[in-house]
Image 1 (cartoon, rainbow, N blue to C red):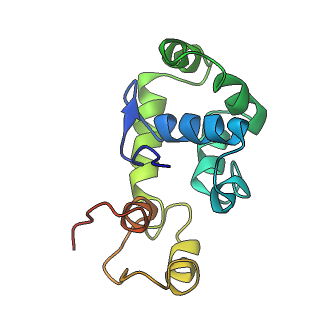
Image 2 (tube, rainbow, N blue to C red; image 1 turned 120 degrees about the vertical axis):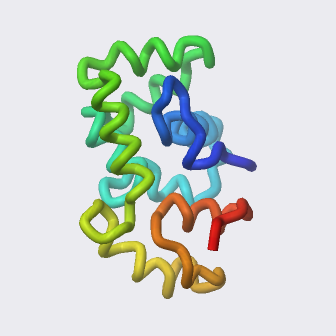
Image 3 (cartoon, rainbow, N blue to C red; image 1 turned 30 degrees about the vertical axis):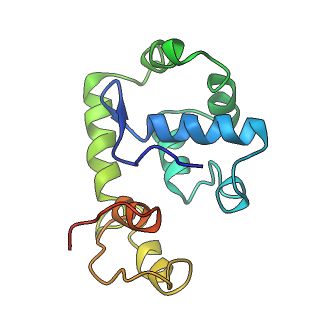
Length: 140
């Protein structure tokens, strides 16, 4: 199973391709447990995404049933989705885990627990941690 990178975009929106991919795999019953147990949990990236865009877990699972060509129109039709809200989300998303941004309390803990097996001393954001964990290059 290979999920889209956290940095992948759909309609200019970070995380949208990843959360839809995760929802599809969850619906198929093949999303690994480490992801499925935390899917749309309020303290994770999924949770921050759905809260920011006024969605629910069920909204995302329903959207995952749409054909690829219908995902972006669905997303763009959400009342909160505007170019400025997407820009604001993207700014928050790439900074998750940094001081002053959501998840800044969780990232240091995850380095010594969930991701203790990784050389993550140089990791500054949640997106970087995900990339490292999934075997993608992260700038040191």
